[in-house]
Image (cartoon, rainbow, N blue to C red; front, side, top):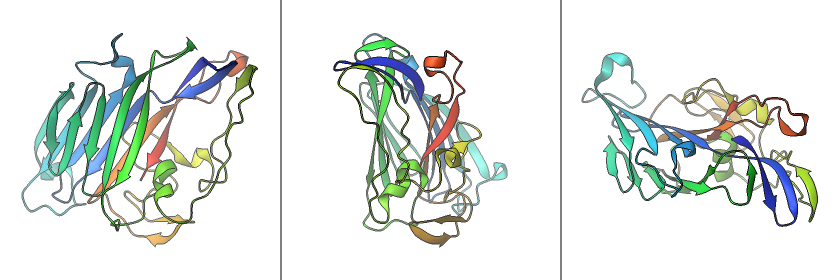
Length: 249
């Protein structure tokens, strides 16, 4: 996310918007996709001929999902994603529209939408919205992350910002009460990292929603991270400190 100042009806809001998404997807066939969508690439018509960069790693035939290492990789394909492009990385499908991009795995459909910043006063010119859909009635293992944990267990209502009808307002809510732990537990070391306090992607994790799960970097798993710059900045004028936050799974 990035800091932004914008008008919301009669209120001037100092808040944040997501501007990048970093995706990691592993398939049962052992293929691995890494993809980055950056809304800063969108032009004044709200699209880009290279809206995302991707790397597809394909393993040797017969590799078990979860056993991917550099010795297994026989081909690495790097490519940009343009409007109306359709391609695959092993069992993972990528479909682009005008400025949106959909990633389909065996269990999840994730869509990233590039949007203009409406009523913008300062900050990025474009943002992203995201949608997640489960494709199967039973997941391989319960997911986690800021978004993923919402797919299992009893729905919980977390803290939300209450916007005034006029004046100035600075956002501060992080859905506290609806997420396990605190927002800092979801900070990642790098754009395509999958390691955080509750990660179910590549190690044993414990959640309030599920029992302990043994997991490897394996089949049908999807990780989404977003750039966050909420720390710092605001009315103080200090430079924000970007952080990477795990969105799912």
